[in-house]
Image (cartoon, rainbow, N blue to C red; front, side):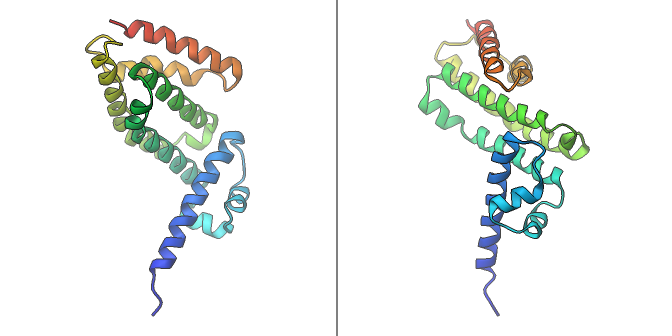
Length: 183
């Protein structure tokens, strides 16, 4: 009987390739076909559909994966940047992910989409709490900021257009918010 491990390893490799390609392709072309994603990932359509039976399933997993990676990046971001700069960097990255999600429109207007957003909400709130704690310890923000309030306030960032003017506006809005966080 053949060993199942290589097949499992190949399946995981295919899944990761699909997710990475889907992330890259959907960021530039939200209406890209699943067949084009499969082809760029180097897998057949059947392999893609075995992992992700619907377009929505693929999009939601890309979003969940992006948010999980962003949440997991907090320690590295805090190591690489001063706390307030880490907060800035982290929120601008989150805004890009959420902007992508919003750009996918109807694909994410479902109970399944709400389930993914709800599932990632607690980890995002915890990550923001860690960033705020670091900023507070550094004296960059006042004590007692509620992470859920900060997320609500910062949500304006992912409503800016995905353009150079939108990026400039997002930076201005972020600085206005940070000014309000200061001690």
